[in-house]
Length: 450
Ligand code: SF4
Image (cartoon, rainbow, N blue to C red; front, side):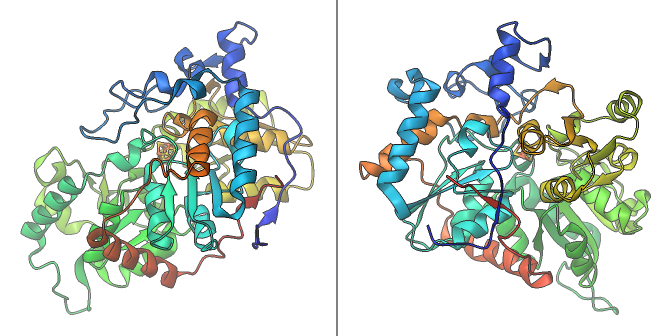
């Protein structure tokens, strides 16, 4: 694979596997706690059932019509961890540069070890873009990430999501029909949404987090809006306020609130939009005064973190450094020492020169991997209950082996394609983000030595 400007990282020395930890809990070999013992089963046990499956999103309502995964052939369900590992290695060796495997930071360790690149969703989309020679991009992440990779890759390249049931409960909370309806209701309050006032500002600029469907990114692109990541949300909001009187931010209320609050926007000027209520549950007067209208969405992984967990960490580990993701609720971000994206968290730990105790508020797979990679520090997840992202965990090595061996046999399985009429405005929204502040892509991820 050609050299790409990505930092090489040491492979974990200790067992970073969340799956092994869960298996030990279920077998009674560990006194730790998991949020659902079904996590020890293969995800194929849940593919045909309604809902997101065990894990942090198991209490969320999955939208009707969400993609489902067909039955995984028995040979992959019955194979041992070692056999799947060997089959994945063999298939990748056969395919060579014809395939690029991408692994999100939150993927299980058994999948990440096979990834050519590991990073956040945008770093990985850029890694896909950096390999125009690859026929296929296997995205070990969730649905919206595969869509973004499809937007940024060549039309001939097939982007593959190993398990179609790997959606994202947060992205699903902003449904395109609800967003269109919201826009119509806002037009009744603000009038012509394209009209500029005496200051040259339109009434509303829509801003969507990267963690949203391509349809939402397309909506934003069509209405003069922009995409943001957790790394550049402030820069993007500044861009939006240069063009609009206010911002409609979706789907994550917490990232929107935490970012706008840090910019000095008062909480009373950040009404929530609940799509099940007229005018989102706010009054016309509140909407007239609004600076940021927050969509009623959240990440079920980051919603699990609490101020009580931080207080306990400070008592149990005097001097602990608490870093949380900005998808956490505002009181948690306020109680932490720092907040930042997955990349921020990773770099903060790497930059610590003295042995340090870190309590981290983000998905447990990344935290356990960081702990294994940095044995000189004590690193633990703020949430004492082992509860991975339900949908990220749907990507099991069995599915990865299945799609890779499919490619070897000349079959493209689980291809994700964004329709052209959605792709064009969605790319526009992404390009606006790049122009607002070009990221140092994809240098912040890491390239596996394997
Ligand atoms: S961690 Fe949260 S935002 Fe990320 S895929 Fe899981 S539910 Fe979605």
